[in-house]
Image (tube, rainbow, N blue to C red):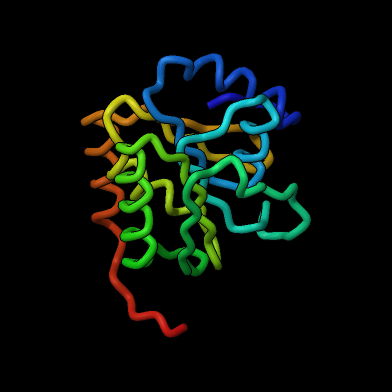
Amino acid sequence: MVRGEDPEATMRVVLERLRDCSKLIAVGDLVCYSIMANDVTPDICVIDGKTKRTYGVPEIREGGFSKVLETWNPPGHITDASVRVLREAVRALRDYQKVLVKVSGEEDLLALPLIMHSPEGGCVIMGMPGVGVGYVRVCRETRRRVKETLSKFREVRLKR
């Protein structure tokens, strides 16, 4: 984690630390915007049009991405449909495509399945509101810990 109040300056530190990542995967509007403000386009960018659950965040332009996917994911949940879309985004990395995933609802918890499905050596970056930026390098141990966390979730039926 990197603490910081200035998103772009904090992201510069994060990007320097993650120079050796094979793929850069970003979750959150401000995170994606801050990476792009540093002249880097994430390989996968997952956004919901909000920061701290409020609108008015800088717009992420679709032009820098070769593929745009959409999904529905309510706050506090991880839907099967969202996991399928994230898997599709990760598969697109094999063809060197940059993917923007637009979430209707909330993207926060989608960092977990992204860690599970992203390639070894990739890095997942997420915002930590009021604190700074968190990141993980995808490896066997990280996946084991995420799998353990996900095992504590329970399945519910959602109505849309």
